[in-house]
Image 1 (cartoon, rainbow, N blue to C red):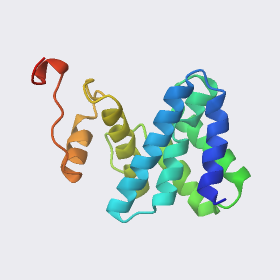
Image 2 (image 1 turned 180 degrees about the vertical axis):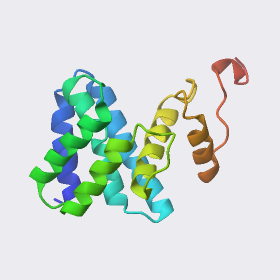
Image 3 (image 1 turned 90 degrees about the vertical axis):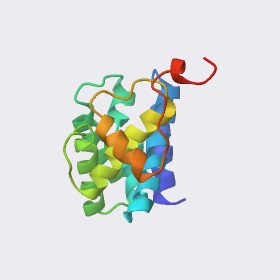
Image 4 (image 1 turned 135 degrees about the vertical axis):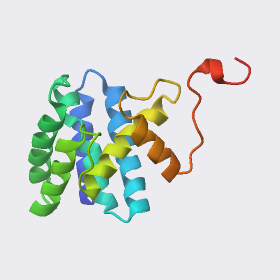
Length: 163
């Protein structure tokens, strides 16, 4: 079993005990897949991007609290990746830095951090396309939409034909 599969198993064990398991599995695995896709598109490390996606909200699902979740998830990710062995210290530092900054979507940082931020926005937009897109993330969504050549989502169900 490769290191990413071992990480998926570790994250799944945590989410299995979460109060909101369905959301945890869908969001963490969805962000991981979106991060891998964006990393491949941008010439970045898809495996590290997927690892960051799997772990970016792990503390939220583990504790049930979203307070300071980026910093807490970064710390928890460092513990998990250290226990799994197979990720070198530089990889762990890169993944944890991306996780620590993923809530700061207004500022641009290193490539892995940007992949993770964009993957988080993309997963939210795709999981509920008719909801108002996360306040403050419209510019990031618009840039992603252009990058991936996606059509514009209707603002509400009332904007769809036949409704």
